[in-house]
Image (cartoon, rainbow, N blue to C red):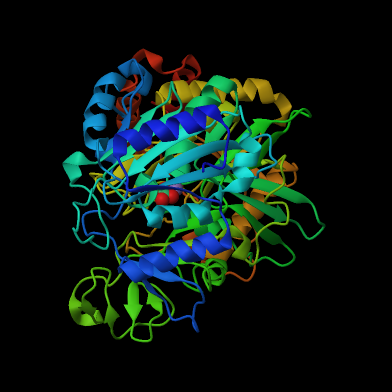
Amino acid sequence: MAPTRNKKLLAWVEEIQALCKPDEVYWCDGSQEEYDRIVEGTVRSGASVRVNPEKRPNSVLFRSAPSDVARVEVRTYIASRKEEDAGPTNNWMDPDELKKTMRVLYDGCMRGRTLYVIPFCMGPIDSPISKIGIEITDSPYVVANMEIVTRVGTKVLERLGDDGDFIPCLHSVGAPLEPGQKDVPWPCAPMEQKYISHFPEENLIWSYGSGYGGNALLGKKCLALRIASAMAHREGWMAEHMLILRFTSPEGRQYHIAGAFPSACGKTNLAMLQPTIPGWKAECIGDDIAWMKIAPDGSLRAINPESGFFGVAPGTSYKSNPMAMESIRENAIFTNCVLTDDHDIWWEGMDEPCEHGIDWKGREWTPASGEPGANPNARFTAPCRQCPIICPDWEAPDGVPIDIFLFGGRRTHVVPLVTEAFDWDHGVYLAATAASEKTAAALDVKGTIRRDPFAMHPFCGYNMADYWQHWFTMSDRLGGKAPKIFYVNWFRKNPDGRWLWPGFGENSRVLKWMCERVDGKAEAVDTPIGRLPADGALELEGLDVSAEDWAELLRVDVDAWKAEIPEVEEFMARFGDRVPPRMRTQMANARKRLGL
Ligand code: OXD
Ligand code: MN
């Protein structure tokens, strides 16, 4: 019996059941008993292996099919009625055409499998900012992950009630089983049958053919960013690809920082920062997504819509991110990591080397194997509550007030350690022209530098130029309560290829300067690209950065900036006359300041 009387939900489940023809239907209640049972089922079927419970209680490792290891941007669609509403950064298809194609694929696609109904809430159950989604999937891996990264089950159906609305999210791995056919550990469909489809005008998600991460855990990138960004545009709020952290001064003044960085720029590390400057404290609220609304007092308040981390594993260590390492000591799901001889997990960049194990493809592995043991986009999934520095207010229904927006990317040259925007509109220009060197989180990104406006290039569910206008409009509504905007680059190198900035916990020094700027306390100097810390304004005491390296970190190479202008303008030209007039003003100002 279905545990709801919600008519829209009952009708949708019935429709999808008739289309996908599963062997059975199971409604998730979100209990621990259910999670344990579903995970145990994957162990018994051979889809996962249990990690040594003495080392990491209640944790498992999955190995995906080698072709299904990351988000597939070429197969991701924004199916708005008009192509120009999707804009040049999205793949577009006519919604009717796309549905026609996908209905053929969905027909009978769950034969031999269970259809799971996952009621989930993005954001705290009692938050007015939260939204409810229902994911239908035939993947127990998806169920287990969704039960960590979102709030799932009976409590969600209770909030939904008999008439409440939800965002339908349909997912299938696209691998029906014939009677008697044995399943493979990681079922999925070939690349040309994968579709990650969004219908922003109907708040609808259809995903087919991939079982991995953002392609399959539909609450995350699909709902909380692509669909939510379009809803936020219509409804006057913000859905951003941002970490949220609380930074508290020795005097107890709290600052809340929301930061957008493309994949593979250390966003999770920054979200779990351990400050090196005496007396300052950092607490994590979220590591990937922020939903923000203007509160009755005029401040911009943010929640983390997720309840778990789905972090990139390689490179995560007690040195780079001790709080993430502490978060994955138990109750974790690992994907595409190495299984060590004592049945623990391992990946490249972990503190201790691994001499021998089973690699992510299930083969015997040693460091001499010539290939990484873990896939570069291997992941850990763990509940936020297990993070030792999770903020006590991380589930506050009204969110936290944002003081600072941070943007950045991975740039080995040109971009200084930190730049403060002259004002909001200049900040929007900096964020819109953000760029980063390439990432392993997406399979199909070409070239080494990619413009990634607001770190939303893969995640904005409508025309990116309209999204910029939305940012301008939000500032008009926020007025004097608008957060200050900064741009950072932790990754600058000297001409010999040596990192100039130690990064990690030392980034707290940069955050402190920003907080002091918010309070009008620290000095800055104007340059053609924005405001940079004045001599001595950013605390360097106890840090081993030579005067020469410091000068290089803040050097504004006007010629290099000039050289980037044509490419920036070419990028903007892709949006044609949708580019907001205020962005054009910023482009003209940028030229003028550089003497062009
Ligand atoms: C992610 C991404 O997985 O941004 O968070 O790719
Ligand atoms: Mn992300």
